[in-house]
Each structure stands twice: as structure tokens, then as C-alpha cells.
Length: 310
Image 1 (tube, helix red, strand yellow):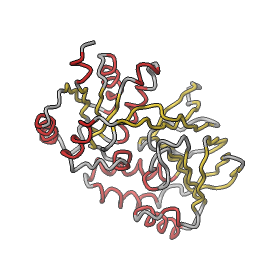
Image 2 (cartoon, helix red, strand yellow):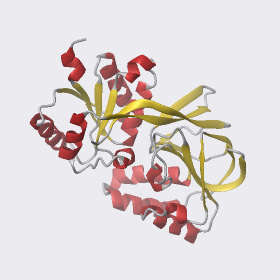
Image 3 (spheres, one colour):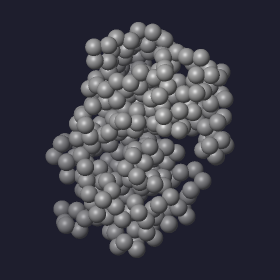
């Protein structure tokens, strides 16, 4: 492989509703101003991201930059984890935030509205090996599956809200309005789930509102989590009254989530969910098929090279 291709970026552009060609042209101008050498491909649908990232890997790009959000990054790291370690270790993954949810990018202070600063940081090519969480489960077809995550897994109410938010965002367009409507709609949804969970030496066997298992910031639910300590942060919220639910959402928005009296935090290397009937499961902001039976969530330390700020 030539040095030229080693230094050339492979960029995957994932368009966001309401931001089309003009947004990409703005990014392109910044890249050209910095004299970045790159080739780019554009995903037409969310299910094409993994195929295109795999294509970039197979074509030998050593720097792969995702212009997208948490879900697109999730697809990218799952592609990388299917590669041999020797291949994976030679690739650096970067992000220019452009998604409905950009929580992992925000953790590193990459801001969607500051393309110039983001590209300047990426150009310096400072990398850090980051952790990935992994859920292993059996699907409805009886197949043994696993899925990696950069940020978090939500089980229960928050996964339900995120699902509603995506649906309402596609109809309403506004991020804030879709969040408010989602909260209103959740009143008509199930508010707790019978769960049987094992975390460290503790066994939780009761009704649970929601649980977040995170190797990253977890959309504010695990504010002390960092993606490089080989640990998972967990927040379990027990069943509570509606007013307490709304109070908890306010604390979540204002960054004081762990202050809620119904939030029970843990730090661990493994979570075993023996039972969580009917509870939706969201991985990095995207719903997955609800696992059948028990499932396990673990962490793998420092397995993907991520481009970080200077």
C-alpha cells in the first residue's frame, strides 16, 4: 500500500434530515482549506453504513472519519471489531458530529456547530485507545448474537423514550419539540418492568423503571463514566411515581441525574440480565430486537483507536 493511501482519509457522510448537500459542502470547504487528502462516500440509509465502512477498511484506509451521530459510530466500531486485531490496530476512527444524538462526540468536546475546530483536531491525528461495551444475547430466531457499543445500552423506559423521540423527530423536525412530545407520549406507555439483574455481588429482583449500562457518558445517566478505564458504569432506577419520573428527567437534563433518590449507581465489569420481559433495549441510541431470555453485558478495554482533541 502506498504512503499516499496511508495518509488519505476515508470519510463516510451520513446525511441528517434537514441538512443535505449544503452541509457537506461546508465540511468539504474546511477540509480543503486544511489541505486534507480524502475520499468520501455517502450513506443513503442507516443500514448501508456498515457496508460502506467495511468497504473503506477493505480498501486500506488507515483514517476513517464518520460524519454522523452515535448510531453511525456504533456501526463503524462493530465493523472494526469484525476485523483481525492487527488490521484494527492500524486504523484510527474519527467523528465530525452530524447526528440526532452526538453524545460520544460531545464527551470529547467535538461540537456539531464547530466544524473548523473539529477538523483542526482531527488533522493533528492524536489517538487514544477506547473501551467498548458488548451485549451478548439470543434473538427471536434462536441465534446467538453480540453487539458492541461506544456509549451505552438503555433497557426500559429511556429506550422507549428514545424510540418515541426518533419517531416524533422524523414527523416534527425539531429536536426540542420531539423530546417534549416523547415525554408526554410516555405517559401512555408502560412505566416499569419486572427485572432480575446481577451486578457484582448484588442481585436486583424487582420492578425497575430503566437501566443504563455505559462505557461512556450515557446521555447524562452515567456522568462519571469514562471510555478508557475498563469498567462499566450502571444506573438502575427503581419504580417511582410519575412526579418523581418527571423530576428525574429534569435532573437528567440539568446534569444532576445521580442526585435522584431512585437512582442506584454501580461500577462493574459485567452485568447479567436474567429477566427483563417486554423491556425495549437501545444500543447507542438505536433500538435492537428485544433479546429472548437472559443476556450479558461486558466491557473490552482499549480496543479501538479514536481520534481525540489536542
